[in-house]
Image (cartoon, rainbow, N blue to C red; front, side, top):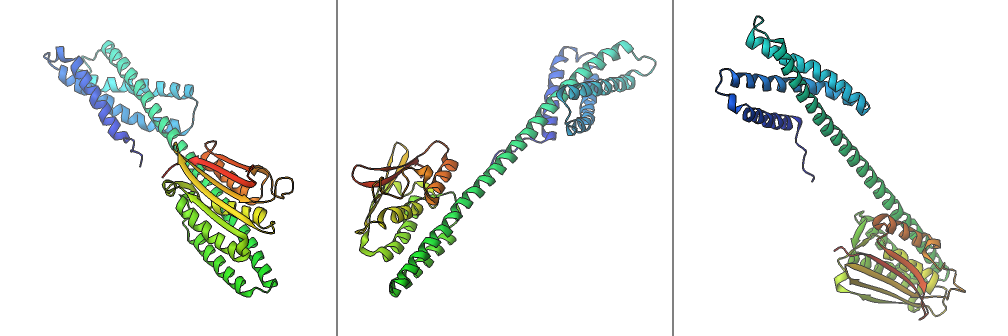
Length: 345
């Protein structure tokens, strides 16, 4: 939690307390003279009271959102008026009308006016800085809320997309007369959706949570594809606690199954790897699939389907340019998606 800025009265008392000490130090050589200490107290008390009155005026001036020059001119006029009054009343009270010195009052009025003008400038500076800080905080909060809303919208976009594809697969199993596999798959879909919906909506989760969710999804696909789908994991233990975007892996493996494994008569393998190096986590999802010249799958992430585009947008929102997200066809005959992120455990 950010520390609270001191209140007006805390600053007012502290500021005028320091000013009073400065005046006492400046007048120390003359304190032995009769009335010097009394006059000093009257002078500071009059200025303190005048600044309290000026506060009400300054607040109204700021509320009008005047240009700085106009604000200064009005503050100057009020400071001279109130400063002259602040010098007149104590002088009249102390000296009386008969011994009142207009020359002495003029000097005191000038001093009071200068001090009050400086006070107004300090007040304006602090007040406008606070207003600007609050506006920045409001904008940052609004931006954060909008960002969270966009992330949530992108995340929820995946659920109907996945559900449509999964129910399509169940329909295929039913048409093939494989009721047992269809029932098992429906049960697995229910478990996965329950886990997804019960999951706290957070921009990032640990890699271990992502892998657990991905395994649930792959269990559904293995029910449909059987021996045609093989999955291999090579997860570095020190990467399990690293934070990654919520629902990062499931769209990647879904893309690998649909565009890579499913079109192959003999099926293929999906490899999921992770490693941590130099405060960066690297995640690779590699899968068998048709080569680029015959694949329906796009050769880059920007022109990919909903899943790949969704991931690209979320990575951009979460990490800006501090990430890598590449899709390529490797010499070993695999499609490979490589993601590199800042490693935060």
